[in-house]
Length: 182
View 1 (tube, rainbow, N blue to C red):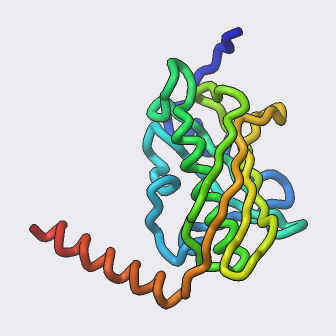
View 2 (view 1 turned 30 degrees about the horizontal axis):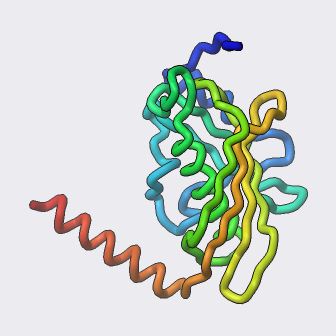
């Protein structure tokens, strides 16, 4: 069974589709990671992913809306599984940061349930399942407009000292200054 779907390409076409649901408050990359850079979610003009993260007012959970554009193609007409896994990885880590845990990913297990047609605007749901010492166990899901489950993941993230993370950010910034000046 194939579905016809026109994939919005212009920024103005996609942004209204990424608007928050009632009871969601907007988040910025700076709020989540103390940085404006993200491998996954900061290309608001491209044709791959367009991501908006929110915090659900009722329970403080990280939620979001993601548009999977033609630059995400894997199987013809469908998003590459790596694009779904990348969103889930970033979002589960961001949920941990939002809850006050500075973390890096240690393990990500992704279950692909349905192939996602390009042009889909998916709803993202995340939660922190439990804490064990430095370990933060998370869950994330990507749902379609009718609530269909496209992918879900479990993540294990490990807490690191915030000072260590901040030093890594300074080192990366310095490296990019050196590389860009050559």
